[in-house]
Length: 145
Image 1 (cartoon, rainbow, N blue to C red):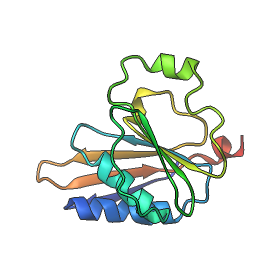
Image 2 (cartoon, rainbow, N blue to C red; image 1 turned 45 degrees about the vertical axis):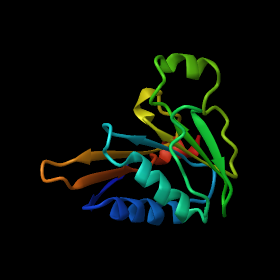
Image 3 (cartoon, rainbow, N blue to C red; image 1 turned 135 degrees about the vertical axis):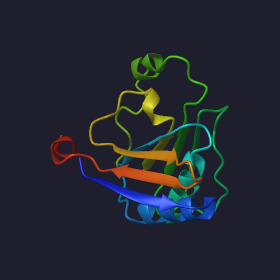
């Protein structure tokens, strides 16, 4: 997988990175957001939504686990923070057969086995407070499946 690294010094810079990423999406993508609490997953998701033309306020669906937003492309925003056993989600078909006309973004995406062809965004807080944002593209083999 191809990996690119970006740097952020603020929530707005993290949202701007997400917005640039979201503007390039065409539909059918699954984006796993991974990182510790406070690393910027929700800020990246808010920016991604802006890049999809979503004007509604995007909130992390921690208690409902999923929220849907309409824009240039629909966005389904998942938050798995409260999930205790990700195997249950897989057994229930979570992220199986996502609609090719929408984008799925999953906070705490490292809690589920990655579906084939997904994007992975790792957010890390550096000692100086900056965020390192590593975006890993799906491999060509996984995307062809």
